[in-house]
Image (cartoon, rainbow, N blue to C red; front, side, top):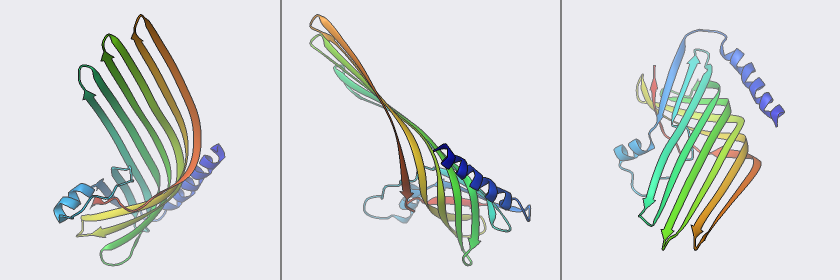
Length: 224
């Protein structure tokens, strides 16, 4: 597995050296995930399609020969609480996604750009839930945690349409190979009736997969 990851780094290094040759002048592209904004402006009907792309912002710079580097970043922090004085549940979600790789862009016409790249990707997610129940002098508490860390690499394809010199819309698709390590913990505690009980279980596993992300995301992109 480490050999596969090292191979991905080596491929990026070769392309990076190629990208830094020729002209020093570069064009920069900064994109923000804007599916909801575009939907409201264009007043689409029906339900919104699910956006599988976890990268909320994207950035790339490309030199006059088309070669450059690209970065994608996504993060989510959520905290939910629900219940009453007898039963309540608290959930915390923490997610982080990063990709970095070589990027190439080619003109398809007056307003269209086609891009492609090879990325190395990293991810770390943690989901924690605590449930508490109190009834007639008895109490029960359950804590669960799901933690995932992973890395991988693979190709990416971009399409950009420009409305003018500095503004446009973009989308992307990718096909990443990923290795993930998963850790699950379940802790239970209960008391009442003159006694108490506690139990803890932990599970570890790893998996390898190819993840296809379809071009459902829309980036509002600024070019400068």
